[in-house]
Image (cartoon, rainbow, N blue to C red; front, side, top):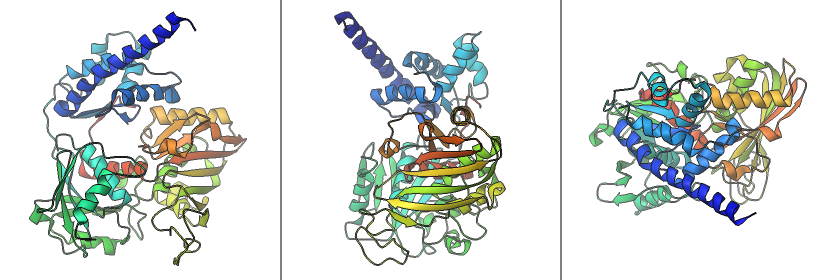
Length: 480
């Protein structure tokens, strides 16, 4: 390598850094002034660093075979600021690629055509919707992080309160610390202040009322100014309509979402698949399980194209708080053995639960699970017998297309790296990530490996259900 080549490489990098730096205030303006959330193939750009922006562009090669340049997206973002846009979710990568492929007109004309329905609507406000978190464990705290991150101007989902049982005299400080620091997901991106006198935490400007209660039917949420709220029960204590209906007896609560598989006649919703089943009459719905959310989108994609005769789902799942750290009594089989030292075979209802979101697969799948000594990120192995013969290349190309261009692009992600391992998917906002390099195909039999962040990816799916129920989902562009 010559000195000139070395310097040119460094110059190229600093030029890209400078361009990314110039993007940051424009991304912020779009978010604060227009309520426009920008992303690169589903990876949000709001409140991201220069390096994060460059990594998001680099990641694009996993999806579209080519690394996306900030020089491609910067003109798009710059032009968006001048269009007086109303609230929207805009994938600038998809817009930039579409503009390059179509050609034939200048960027301004292209954007005005693509975004015609929201141009000139700057300043339009949607009515926000109050949200209450009942429980503040792994999922509850991640939901809080996402809700704070997406607070915007306050006209979307508004986190108003958290309900917990008081665990100690310094309970609020301990809750704040757990929100601020996370051994798996890292530190909270922002500031958190504590008001012990009023039992509130303020996270990046979102004031969260902490309510101490042990009986879900005794809280008067209206006394805290909360009205028509959606309550998210992430305790797992009540999973049927009778138990969860206790929340609806409380003034200020109008609907309930369960973050676990629902029992009885409760609708189990996997966003992207059957969220259209939710009606205004549904006061209680379940967001199903993390595993069900991970596998159903991929199963639907495969069944739509190739047909599924039958199959088996094996889940390699990180341990959870339900297990023991060291050997001790547990009512469940094998779960009493140390989660940190053992692989533990256990049951999963995910395969049967698929039918609640995809009735066409009822009775076609069996399932089991192995809990392993990792704290987060799991894998589902889908062993499928298809109705149509295919090959590995066709399957992978189809699933890449589904991750890029289909209505399931928020649920299905795609990677073709031979070097990825579980920790690479911590923080994934997709329901599942297809590992293309692991795909096995033999005529009408295919084995797919799907990674999923069983905490954060699932929490993102729950938020999507909440946005639909609250009617605060902004339009997404470009339309697929």
